[in-house]
Length: 561
Image (cartoon, rainbow, N blue to C red; front, side):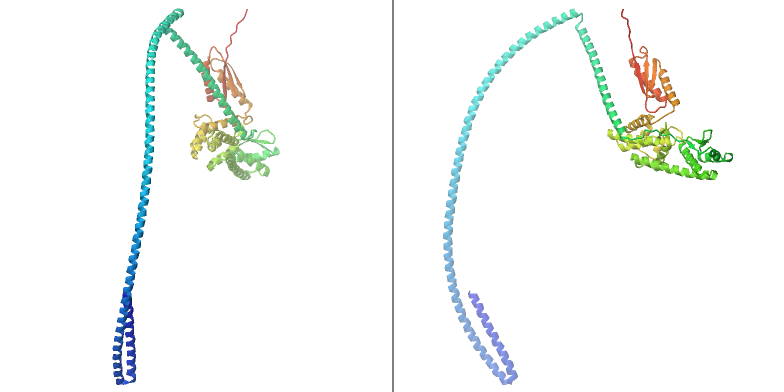
């Protein structure tokens, strides 16, 4: 407080001095401009006088102000000191009261906790005492039980010893009785013990062999029946899903003429027209006494088809000379090639087989002009592909691969007129040339059992080929070759020793052989049937399969008198 008062007084004196100095400076300046030198001296004297009076007056004022401020500060300090002493006394008393209350509270809580712990200890002591009493009772009970158990064990040991003695005596008696019975049985049966045992074992072995044979036969019959039912179901379902035509196709080799005069125009002057047709098409024209018809003869069905179309165009045009013949043959060849491509693409689309080489598609189209026993080979291949896909789906095999193999299984027949060898070998070479999968190549190679089928797809294609070829109406053959095939079949069967009679049945699909029972027994029948089947496979060509049935019959006759 005192310091603040002194600072205020100092600020007032400084302000007064500054104001006085400013007034003097202003008066001096005015005196200089107004009064000259005298005025200046007067002003200087007045300034000095004023300064003296102002300083003295200011010092007295500041002294009085300072004394008043000091007195006021001392009074305020005394008041503050007395107030602080009173507040300190009050706080001290309040702190003492609070400390006493806290000590009392803590003492009460401690006494209460001690009391609770003593009560808990008393309860635990009572519980422990009760458990000790219970354990003592249980211990006494167990001791009594142990004494009783020891007594029972001792009694049981005594009884067991007695039983062992009785058993020992009884065993000796049983052994004596058993030996006496065995001796009696040996005297009655006139067999020793070892001989009787061997005889019983031998009889048991015979019975077991008979039972095993019966079980094996029963299981074989059951498996055979189950397999036949499943196979019949799959095959019938596949046939039902395959809507194939039942009418066999006949290759056209005769061109009708409007009149017999056309024969002379086709022959031409000195035979130039017919020579031109034959040289351009590679087909032999047979012109005989058949009215209004010309026969075309060629081993290649494509060339024969080109010649047929060209000849029909020439007949319709009427202008028959070497130049027109060449023109019509070129047009016919282009038409045949276009049809071959279209037929190949149709086969691929119908069977849903993709990714074939264009040359393979062209070869498939050529099969439309190829027949086997008057069955169109392309339609047969499509049918086999469809059946293979259905059978593969039923058996859980890759249906796409099965359809591909079924479609290509007879691809070699498109080139049999150009390349030597069987259609199987040609087909295998063609498939290898155009990078077909190994499964397809194997199926093509095995579909006529040229090699043993090793995959499921090969077996499926073989079965589908047999189904397509063997169904009624699929193929036909002339009567002479049919009779020759049946005669050869019976000749092969009759060539074996012990065969008495032989009959070809079911259009040559089954042969029944009667054997002499005194020459061929039951065991040899299996071997003879296998030999006959192998010779038929090696020496004959036939569609489908031939079932070999051997029948052995024994008859015993007597007369009652």
